Length: 549
View (cartoon, helix red, strand yellow):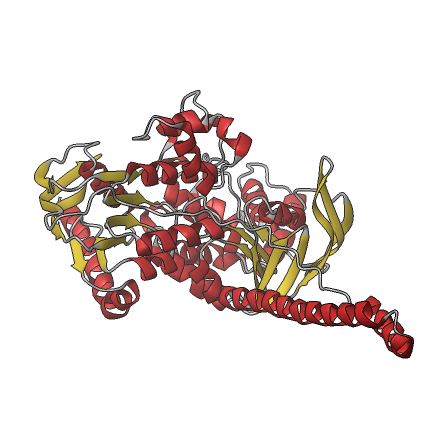
């Protein structure tokens, strides 16, 4: 068990948390939610001991081991993958290294033998002989292939490093597991594996995530941060949402009845306070009036942006034709003979683990790179707006937010531009902030403002929910659902994909395309085994070709 007792944490004069008391118990998974800036990640750091409280303390059951998902993807660049995972159990890793050092000595003494014996005993008690196979099982579950388990971390791709750090956090059956955005940069198969792992995990989990489907799958409780307090709810995310909305509704209805009663009493007192025969009744009603207290209903600190993509022009019947596109990057064929035709009502989700292929296809369609083979053609009535996976270059300048968006506005009017910024929660002085100092979430909201102001009737979005809080994800989700144009997008948010897309495309590891007109859930249900067989066969073919060489 881990608990916070009267915890207060201040940043300057502002109290991020005030007298928080909460217990996280064994066997439960707690989803820690709240608006951006509410302090979710900060609270995890307080629980882990990385930040000290201003007041109060964190108590962990003696002897229990706490594990944290680390965010520094370059910290272990000089270590082998397998070592990094086993580092998740620091004591076990120390024993392994000390043993290796002793056995490597040329002048092995009696004292070394005694110490090695002690270490071997502790090593066996900690299931040390199973460490590498357990680590390999975690890595394979997350999609890290066996042939890179002993590679050096710096040689891995960014998405692979994320998975290794997650495996490190999960390794060794920790008693308390703290996960900050564990689904970020994971493919959908890895997320599904993680969901099952956490559902079957017997100890304590506290997780921060913006993935509503993920929280619904794994959470037994929701810890809601709002106005410097943390309120605990039993149930998953949907249950929290319904419960919190119902509570506010009930309080408003109770206040309404109280207000009606107050008005009734005030009218009686006003009419009869000067009437001698009614004076006792008026006095009685005054006492009753004084006892009525309205519930203090604070509005939530959560703020929802207003996302509304409105095309300037209705789209025609000819939208996009892609014929036999192929592209090889660094010797790997990421697109192989890809062909499809889009209709005017298509909203296409690109799913699966081939991240580079999705981004490459989007870049080709936006004219940023050339295909090796094949062609594509946009319809004459179409106009495109693009949300890139890596928007760094967009913000590498000295512009303010308002000036930056003015550069994309079809109307030369700062008031018009500020209207779009206001919808995306950039109010007042926010408009003069430099774009280069914006947070990840603020940059995403800027890009969405740019897409809204463009009036495009075809949207391409490459992982737009990364860095967004739950409220912004919900707003974007709803905005795309009601968008009357065509959308192509890649997204790891299951609920986002399920509720938005009417067509699913998956680019397989060999670069081939699977294209189905269906919802995401139906696609997974009908084709899961077929997809896995296809991936397996593709890997087998590659292995056979390598052996033949």
